[in-house]
Image (cartoon, rainbow, N blue to C red; front, side):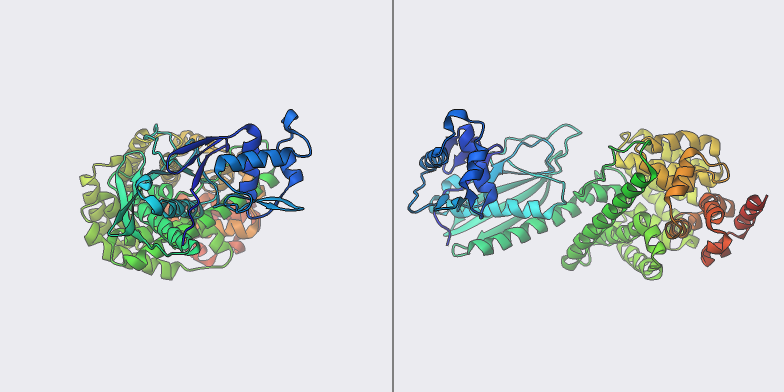
Length: 555
């Protein structure tokens, strides 16, 4: 059973609180600091010395009994009783302890990714209002557990928030409505796209009157995770995706982007290498979280064609983000992953034929697993692109496919149009910029490569470390190229070579383009470690490039 303690919702600095139904409280600076320390330290006892230190700047209120005076004032405001405490209990000889529910704060929305609010109907529930408020607090806790570290959930029970400007970080807004029907407490939950107001998912739950608080917490955690997963699916299945499908999936993940903004090109190679390693660990963690989400969704919706395409994209993304690490570690799951991608896409395509982003992505994935399909892939892709109303999302995909199939100029036109339609510096912009650099390297057009490469490298000091072996000349290395060569160790670099063959070079239909795409990183491996370090699969695919590199090295 729930006790009858009114749920407290504190302001972020604990200077005020609302106490249902509608009672407002304000606190002095000493009271706010004492409250914050007690509530945040619960369920541990907070010593009198620590509480005195928290109020240390308060001059006249300092003294042997000042802590007791402040606690007594708080008890009066909260309607608490020292003999039967509901919020603050005395531990004689030790200090004080917060025994109320975990504090809930109504936060500032700035920098939040999810807003919980408004919460409606609690003032009409009478004796059940405490149960509704306890469920809300547990649901908030579930949301905060469910999103990636570094992201934030803001609690705004009054719902005094409107959709923000384009740069607003808020992704979702979750509304709760409580009511009693036939003696049962009902909660309606709705998740909205914060920018558009579109409802992504809804759910209705009956809250049992006899449920213990621990059970309510588990229920709330499950509901919160389910709603985050379902909202993610709705976001990436929407017709108004924020860029190409892989970018939209990453954006909807509520995963933090790795921040290397504090680095500069003047930082030492060891520091840059450490940051590159950290970014890759971050990518692995993000990929695993997304994998768990997709697996969970597919358990309940195994025949959903959108989820099939998304899972196939996710498997492809494993090699884009992590393939070089897998190859370096001797892990080769390509055969089973490719078979799974082909099965997923083949099953899904009839169900997404009317949705250009998904159909075009399916075509790209079919080309990835079987480049020789050629005409079939082209037919699916061109038909999907011709029907697309979201050209900013489909132009990068059709552009890359055209480049792979030998129509370099037609593909570059698409990529350039996509860049002009995309906000500079966004994930979609960088995604397309890498595709443009890839196309120009394969075409051997070094003159036109300089401009997009500078834009890519301007993002931070880390892209040059990763991309210079692909896009820069190792026979005439730049400062960036020499720095990249010093940072990369043998297993890492050989893994990059094997992965470059798998995710890029082998996908070009023209042999000259394949050789151009692999030449730089292959040349770097030979110069650093000799031709014997080149994997057998790569040696077999590019004998002419290897011979030319060996002649240059020996000259």
